[in-house]
Amino acid sequence: MKTYYNPEDLKKFGNIGEFQKKLADKFFDYYGETFKEGALTAREKSLIALAVAHTIQCPYCIDAYTVDTMEKGCDEQQMMEAVHVAAAIRSGASLVHGVQMMNKYKELSM
Amino acid sequence: MIKSLKARHSQLADVGYELKILSQKTPTGFEPDAFSSKLRESNLFPLQPTKIDTLQINVGKMCNQTCKHCHVDAGPDRKEIMTRETMQQCLDVIQNNSFTTVDMTGGAPEMNPNFRWFVEEIRAISKEIKIIVRCNLTIIVANPSYHDLPDFFKKHNVEVVSSLPYFSAMRTDAQRGEGVFEKSIRALKMLNDVGYGKEGTGLILDLVYNPSGAFLPGNQESLEFEFKKKLKEPFGISFNKLFAITNLPISRFLDYLISSGNYDGYMEKLIASYNPVAAEGVMCRNMISVGWDGHLYDCDFNQMLEMKVETPGQHIAQWNNNDLHRREIQVNQHCFGCTAGAGSSCGGATTS
Ligand code: SF4
Ligand code: SF4
Image (tube, rainbow over all chains, first blue to last red; front, side, top):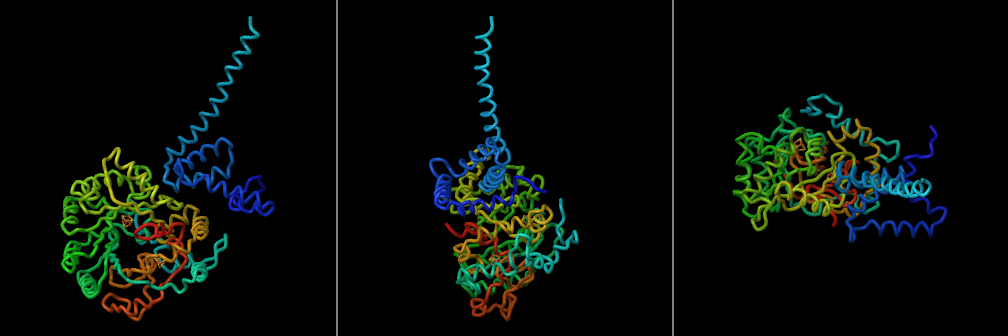
């Protein structure tokens, strides 16, 4: 079956350097540095990444950060709560625009 | 409770079949001698001992649990346990050598009727030697005759190393069986009560974390931090160190990997995570593992695959220091479990 997404492609992520090495190197350096233990723990960063992955709905990232959060000792409840954080921000972002709708409504109404 | 592979007459109870699977080229393509090749690249082939300072003794496959991932295929239906005579042969070897550590494992070692006698005899040989018992915790609360184990361990200054795959019931029970988490917590409290895992007592209680599924353990220190926090708060439990251990693809864990469709992916991950530094520190380089019937192996995993030490004498009664120090350690693809990432041994990660 032909699909746009192939799970095997995730493992080939590193290959993007084949077409443009310098930028890929810079990106992977930056990426690696970002996820190291810092003011935030690597575990916290991984949960944030999992939430963001659900916001951008990237199947590769969801796959990768499900494994990563599991490896870092997060459980299913913590992982689902991270997804809810993403969902809450997304729905909140829609709903807060409801105010704009209300403003416009009121502007046009008698 | 699930049964052992042996009682289920599973094909995987046959080590010949296990080794065949481990030696097969997978669709993702690793060669049958992939581990030896990796060692060769790291200038570690043939793999040889550095010093033998640890004697690990498996006193039997009998256990009160049947964890899904068990590499021993242990359980209540396994009757193979070490006799007093074989224990005496181990004691003779301990007497005539200068091991720093005797590490007792099983099954549930405490279920061997000669277990306490054996511990007392080892302690009588040396006050300093480190005696470790790999205690599955639930045995302590299994029946009243085991309730005094914490006191017994304390009396003989035994270090306790216990498995707790997670700080929640759901994941622990999924791997180790219904109700195991609650019983483990009770047992940990009993150990804490006599001073185990408490600062200043010198009584060591270490925990073993191993993933409940087809993924690798993360950073040992971060996991330890998390475990300490999560066990302290609701349960008031303290412990010394956490060892993060990778599940090796043998026995019941292999059965799980195959039946869940995770085998290829898991092997691929282990191989991709090969770390030459971890390879240098694999535990078989400083230990000999003794099986319940007295045969000698490079490690507990090789023991389960019935790959005996490659020396003329292969039984504890034929112990020969020179031969054992000069031997070549038997390896196969399961060894990738010891060299992935930060490395894995009975004492957790092998690199820092
Ligand atoms: S993992 Fe340990 S406690 Fe579980 S069945 Fe095997 S020997 Fe028993
Ligand atoms: S499985 Fe045993 S022989 Fe293989 S590397 Fe690990 S400790 Fe050594």
